[in-house]
Length: 266
Image 1: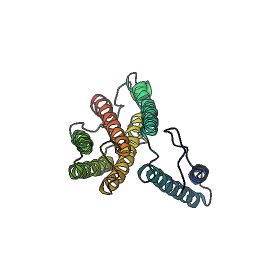
Image 2: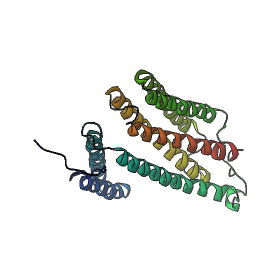
Image 3: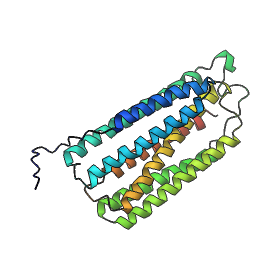
């Protein structure tokens, strides 16, 4: 019979092929993406293959992490503290990512150049009414933030069925937000090529929409895990990370609504 002689609370990770496989997938995706954008033959196939490699490595790598946490018991409180710090630093890096887009927006909007007509929005640009679709999406996203908090408190209280209901509500609201955002893009009176206004608007709101999609996938995985009894009152960091990420998405949208839709569109 084997005896566990480990005398510390930390998880010494077993050797895994997925880091190098994911790195190779990222290289193939980047290299093929450049080929595809420059019209080289086979670039599209290489890009698709690289993305498939990345998606597969994400699935198997995170599957292993879930197994180590849930079934092997490696995620002690010390390990969870490290994971929390890692997630917080990741969110800080995401804040810096969006700060660059807000910087570009304010750089152009606070002192519009003569090429823009010295006004903001630039001459010829018809801005989106902030109290139409954007206001509706704000209400949807804020409600989803409340429902994900409801799910978190239900997990802490041990009310699994209530947590499942709250997560389902959150995911439905997330899908509604994404669908409405797509409709807004289709009906928008300007596109990404319409001066710096279009480029900053679509870059910021588009990347936010991508983050909403990633957060939705995150929440769907949490729903599957919650339905499989993976989370307990004291062991549910996977959900906690998803909730933090979702609140971050909420806050970014509030800044987008106030600056780019309301202040920047009048």
